[in-house]
Image (cartoon, rainbow, N blue to C red; front, side, top):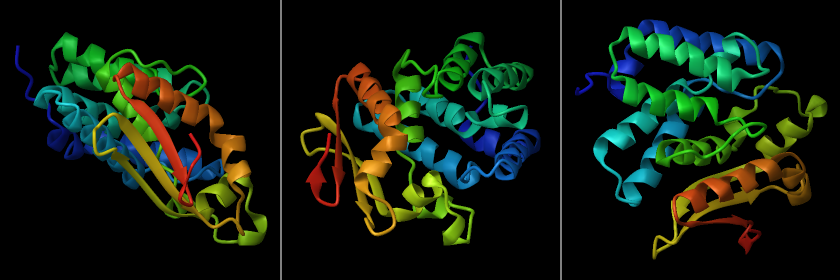
Length: 222
């Protein structure tokens, strides 16, 4: 059965948009970096780019974008186990929209497997979304405007002056390239909090049959 549920439709659904807004409000109250529309839309764009480049079909790409924009809604309940609670929430929302069970399975599996504590690339959709989510590091995600009270997550994100995700020319590697102001945060500090995320990106990339590389300030790190 063909599904009428599209990424565009999801973005126009007021209930789902409210869950995204409220989930981000929860994280804002806890002092976390931005997890609202700029983040989830960037995750969707990166996931789509990865799958398009690797030649996946349009519906697989569409499902990855749907999973991406909904992936953090579980934070409205609690940050702990937000991937799993978000997957359950997404099941109910998508089931009510009469999305076919096979497609719901793909979306909720990706959502339920994106947090680095429990994440596992299970298929192309979940692998691409992991890469999109874990490579989103940038200055604009920092909410704190007082540099003197920055914690390590604030410092690392604020130090990133440029961030891009692209494929190598021969499409054998996904490359995360960062330009970091080392006067704000050291490269070592980046890896102190993001090493598990980068290793997860490597696993997800390998699942898709490509390598994962990281370039920081012009030097290849991974």
